[in-house]
Image (tube, rainbow, N blue to C red; front, side):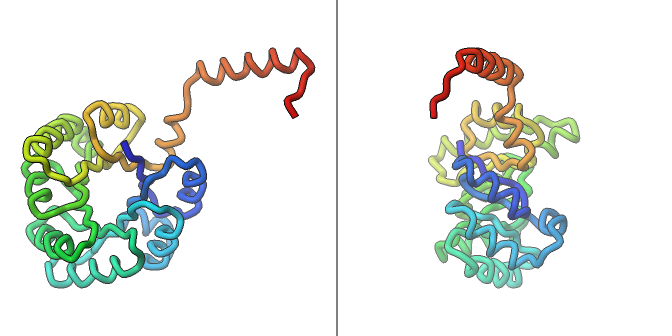
Length: 217
């Protein structure tokens, strides 16, 4: 499963990119607002930090303007994936951009029927929001399972990009279900490294090594 970083913080992305474990980035208007920087500048900088897809979101709600925005965003760098909402106009825009060879990430997916429509429109990625579904008492991971089944039934190439990830258990469940990508806030990625037994074992090994009085270098 690929890991995307869900942030517009270039410094956080650069730090995670150094691990070699980052496959792409997702941004949205809310994340850009937190950064306090110019949107196009942020997208351009991020696109230079990673080799994989960088999702940049349109903000128009009508097809014609959304398509113009999408083409402008796609022109920033070759690895831009244009994000559009899962609306009628959003999927019209998805189809037009996909026909032009542009990567498209269809966002704000909350049902398997919506995911089916996005795949038929040629989406590169579909972004189901598991955390937001969990928040209202619905089964976010159940949606991932349904989408995986439908896409496999018809050999759709659209990648399932699990979004609104809140904790490491979401990552584990997404991987078990065969999701293609999980987009994770930096804090969640760092938590994946943690386990108390790892810390305890390392401390014991280091204590024993110190007692030998030796040095590798």
